[in-house]
Image 1 (tube, rainbow, N blue to C red):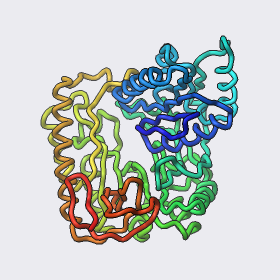
Image 2: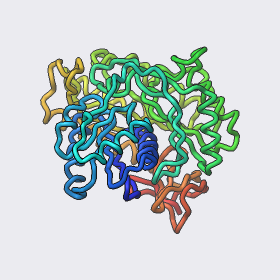
Image 3: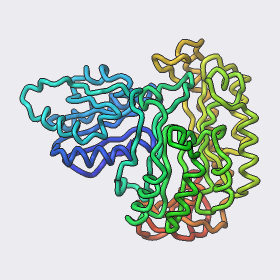
Image 4: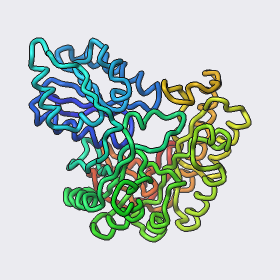
Length: 426
């Protein structure tokens, strides 16, 4: 979760990198519409806990700023607008399409200025009717030294645990020319690293003429924006990775050697019940193939603990995936049922067991991270400097820098050691 520094329009962001980008659009459009003394909560719906945290934050914000208008948007607002509209702390609820619409923000300003508003509190359209997406022109993200560039939105898959397609709609992509132009603009603004983001990034291009794959887009950005120092990908689905993308990762060092994989589980039966499209062996083979092509590559992954019907043996296969795929950065999600999803109707694992399995997965992830950190000691890494004396290596590993260094710079540093969570520069 992150908060801004603007006192007039505060935007509190939960969830993914795409939400981070969209929060900048929200901040810009809300200010342009004339809003003041307003707080916008851009929610996430990926887990029940994310929704609970959003509601808790809304109540806290209203206590801290009782005169401020609280506006709620994002995936949780899209999937359950009535829940937020019924909260007395909330003045307005906007859907995922509406939150990026300048006209909606002007109408919201006019509504909030009324002594007794006559409009409906919630403005949330059918997200499944949206067929296009745009590269929103954001010249920076508050508090970030890397730029996030949205190239895709929505998802056509229906994993049985996931509610996100109902918050984001069907898959749609930004035309390649628009992405390249936006990337050039971001580089002109001084950004050294761009992160391509999307809800289902590796489905990029399927709705565009000629269906250009993600790999072609990556190559076009690299070709036409030669001043770009580093290009990074957000979470990808390994089964959708195309040959052009593999070639780009293998042949151009400007593509960062860090891939975050949407794996979710390591047992084939659980993967089938999740309605995933890859097997355990598919995931292992992909990591082995990429490591041969790019020996310095590291992998992160999302893994769910305690999916319905998961036995101890099934869970142990997920646990073993950390070693079998050579994972370094692990995102562990204790399974929580989302109303309306098929998995919520399956036989559930007892909550204490879900919690215990998530703990074991996190411990395995921490051990894998320590091994990676141990292996970095003595190496020279190129670090993109961030705020508060922290930087990130090519592998997205955090580094504590020595001395004062301006944010947004690329620096070669020698790694002296680590503290178990991040590297320490000499």
